Image (cartoon, rainbow, N blue to C red; front, side):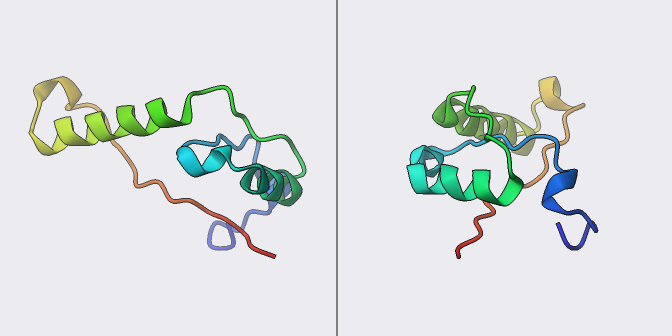
Length: 80
């Protein structure tokens, strides 16, 4: 966020994906950092699986995903 010159209040929504986002402490840290409830409406495992399938199709040269740009996603956890 610092590189983008953003603060937590500039972030409209935080979407939790991946298995570790089920851990209550992770959810609480996100809530404390961003001062809002994280969005947990999607199945965290399915989101990761869909991303992996899209990435695999891109790497395989599948023409069905030629207009998709997949950015790397990173887990950001502030431990304090």
